[in-house]
Amino acid sequence: MVSLHDQVKVPGFRGLAGVARRDVTPPVGIRARNWGPADWNASRGTHRAMTLTAIALAEEQAPGSGVSPARRTPDGAPRPASGSVPDGAAHPERTGAPRTDPLVMITVDATWWRRVDDERGVRDAVLAGLGLPPERLLISLSHTHAGPVLCSHDADLEGGELVPAYLERLAAQAVDAGREAVATLAPATLEWTTGRCSLAADRELILGAGGSHGEPVDTGPAASGAATSAGSGATADVTEDFGLPVIGFNPSVPRAATDDTVVIGRLSRVGPHTGHDHPAPTGHDHPPSTADASRCPACAAAREPLPTTMPLATIVNYACHPTTLAWQNTLVSPDYVGAMRDLVEESTGAPVAFFQGASGELAPREQYTGDVAVADRHGLSLGHAVLAALAELPPPGTALELTHAVQSGAPLGMWEPRPVEGSRVLRAVSDAVVLDLRDLPSLAQMEAEWADIDPRSRDERLRRARNLRDGYVTGPTVEHPTWVWQIGDGFLVAHPGEAYSRFQRTVREHAGDHPVVVANLTNGPGFVYLPTDQAYVRGAYQAWQSPLAPGSLARLEQHANHLIDTLAATTPAPAQTSTEEQ
Image 1 (cartoon, helix red, strand yellow):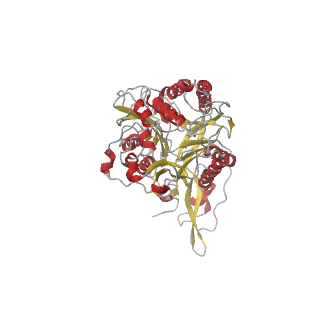
Image 2 (cartoon, rainbow, N blue to C red):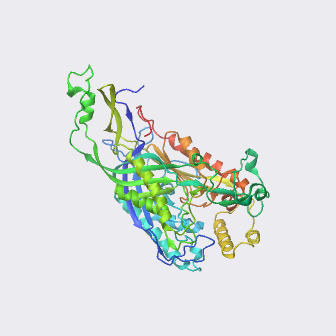
Image 3 (cartoon, rainbow, N blue to C red):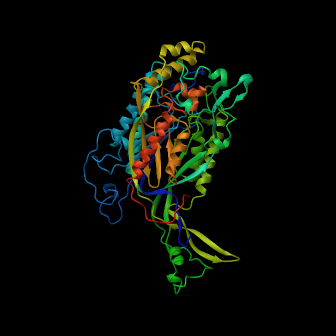
């Protein structure tokens, strides 16, 4: 039952925040050949600017406490200055380190890491420059396929000589932006909402006989352990029975089956109260217990001023491969993310930080083009979805409260924005899950299997496979790291791979009413696909490209859910109020 003064709260976080932006557009002439069919190697211009955005979050000292919430245990007691945990254990923060370090997320318009040593070199430089422990830094790539090749080992190739210096610049800009974000920490509120965008579509197309579109293969539990051939990783009879697996829009998968979720965070600077009263509600009857309007709770609530706020940043999390622009395009570009960002920033006046979601099998319907107008059109689709969701939120720092009833032709319930105190919880945990490798073919076997395809495409495949394995595939299993942050009422789950969208669906279902940002291509190592087991049976590219065995996606899901539970178990229980996700 709903009662007067019940509130519908927007899930969020109240604390300190700072934001900084840097331009990381690479020089013209840098190696940007990300497609096998490309007959060029070095970029010849720029479509839209490539950017880096840093957001720092920190706990704000509770008024009158004398001790920062970051230095208190979950039950409110002062936290000891030092401690220890077993090596390799998953734990919120590290009790041996000061707990006043901020959380810093850095989003970058970039392709993907080709090698472990390049990613590690950049992230280690940023960790050192910001003085952060590893669990408190996320560097997340947008995954544009029209950006520079992030591989210093390509320095001997055309345009590759510019890559090492670009990676050094990327690290320096990340440190500079991170420091500015931390230096500008000030009271802020981060509120989460959800929108919908139909840009992404299933891209696991089965090309049947005569060019028809085959239906997705329906496999049972037995399929998860299907044996794979030495080269492609597909079962030997996949193409014979099911048709040719290609990467392209699959119209046989209905839109309703495709994850169209957009998770949006509205970050606002919070200033002093406005200092003026709102008009007292009229047309309602005072409760019998109040003698006059000065003692009426509804009138008193109306006199409570709303905080002054200003836009600080918008976080956008959406799962869709930025593969609009392909081998025909010679310009570096953020793909659809660029037009989305420009639209949202023009409307809000604040920077956008984009996190690529679990998009292993998702991409635009229209893609593989050299026409930048198509990428811009895709960006406008996502941008308008973001703005529509933001427009439905109440003012920052408020909740909708059922303040009173107005007598009209019928009693009318009046829901109005009222100041509310958001959750101040800010926690981080990181830990790796052990994943099995499939029976991998040697590079010589792969070269023999691909002997009949275009030589440029074959060389690109072999170079990627060699770089992917070096420093990552060192034994029968690999460790795949995962980061989970609790930001007020929401969670951020990140990992370095390219998980299928089932990952974000599973994690969000587990989190219940808590909003969850799910980010692929964040930190490292492990820049590999994590497909469904059915993708292995279909012989999908994502399955034979990945060195991971079937079942890896399920293990990652279980691991991420466990880390969410680890943080939730250390969170103080909130006060009992009537709340509902906005």
